[in-house]
Length: 103
Image 1 (tube, rainbow, N blue to C red):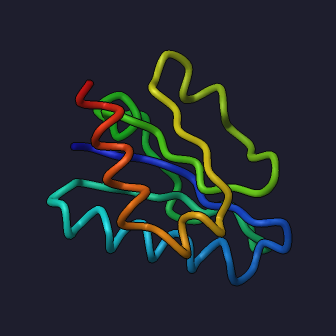
Image 2 (image 1 turned 180 degrees about the horizontal axis):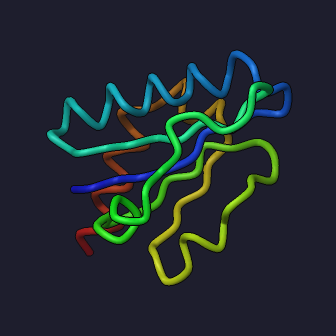
């Protein structure tokens, strides 16, 4: 499965990057292709490309705040969870995404 997403927390520091790392590792274990953009205190990093978004099966938002650029995902399957969920249960989260997409 091809996944793209955004990670952002209220402080824009630790949880943003921890959530990204946990989700990326869990996705790779399942053999997924994943690219996560971060929107933190230093701005946007690892920005998603138009091609990545077009090719994605699902958009995963691990966010606690409003993020910029949501219009890019119009028409895509979107899953939104708090950063805590991504940090505490990344494997379970990815398994549930697989179940939802494969229905």
